[in-house]
Image (cartoon, rainbow, N blue to C red; front, top):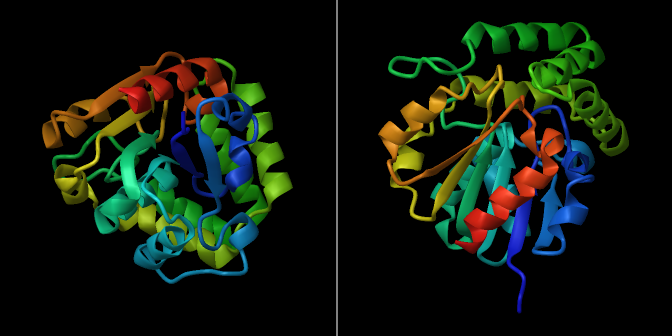
Length: 246
């Protein structure tokens, strides 16, 4: 039996190394490809100007229809890719992500815009300290926060950080992109995996998501923060398989 192709996209500030501990679990069921977003990790010397160019760069690297799984910023990028290149996406999973990352009219369950503005300002003053602060924010509320934070730090150190310009672009995308119409019009099956204690993409966003698209699948990870694939790897793998096999 041919294994489905699974493409993994990391979140802001990280790189494809964030999937290192999960990939051995996935390889029994999928052909796994973990990609760096343009300007991040191994792609840090190949920046792009906007979200559209980031999506085009990723689409060039995958020739077949695949299952795409994007975490946080990677989830937004994967959603836009699915809208622009539907033939390349058989199913889509957004992890700790939503089509509108910040609060807006009729979109209250999201991060406050000033949080990202603050990170943009701090980034220009001290890149390393700002990244460490963001990593700590991602594990807040997780039942196993120390272990998850350690994994994030190891991934960052091993795979390399992004350039300052690419980090600022990532924050700009999170702060300005509104992909709600993309989500509504999306043809491939879609699932959204949320952490119960996520302070960046709160679980309450599920209600708003279902108002946009009643047929999407919502999975909630108990006692999880912003990185449920690290804090709950067995449950995460099981829910992923259930969705992709369904």
